[in-house]
Image (cartoon, rainbow, N blue to C red; front, side, top):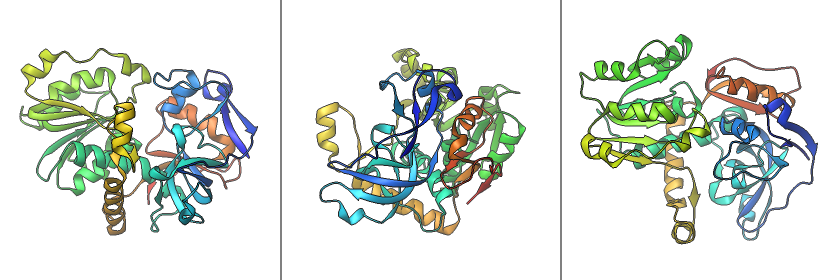
Length: 357
């Protein structure tokens, strides 16, 4: 099968090579999915650049995390998945940008019937992560105010839509007038162009100096540090990612003094599900969300999709052969919503149309 492999570190067009590799076989708890579409993520830029901090796999390796496709083979006891159209993430968060990929059954869900493959690929990761952050961790409710950074991005646009659908008041940040306008279309009550104004001052003005009940931060770094000044009394600052660059993870932990004087809480969220969450915690110390919770969450999200309350935002669709160039556009912050790789699309025929499902 064909796969985009990181063969050296550098810019994506230099780091990636399209190779013919052996199709993997699923082991215990795994499925093999024949991919129809995959999705680009900013952390794949970090992978090309050799900036991964937690897991930096040896070269060469296949890039990519998210995909949609048909289950072609299954590990022991998982034959019920065969032939089903699914959304999932590749095992270990690597290997999706290929004609087929291994996925964990615990991270696999039936693709929503109301979405085509392109939009189904764009749906899974951002809406699951945003829902976990806003409601399971953030306990956001109607009437509360939430600040969503990078509101025009993949996860940010999902968070804006979900929060607005729940009756919360959404303040979003974005860079540039086009992205600001999109945030308002997604349901934000206020959208701040951080390139033109200080978002801390703008949030203070929008909340009459009170601050927000929840900060949903997928940017991190300096943005995260300054966001602490936006949190209301008894509010919560939630980190969900590091779009400012993986180096943002290296910033020193916030001093306890800030938490003490701020009278707010801090937390994080990770999208990872397991049918054996207790065993995972015992082995790794990680608090993994139980699969039964994930099934309930997925059902609620599909219901919102069916009702038209939310929709994945596809900013661009590219051919498989054009993946490295598209990843460089993402590195340059030139994308809105999700960039989907269509494995059936001929080279040279791209679709730049920004649209919801």
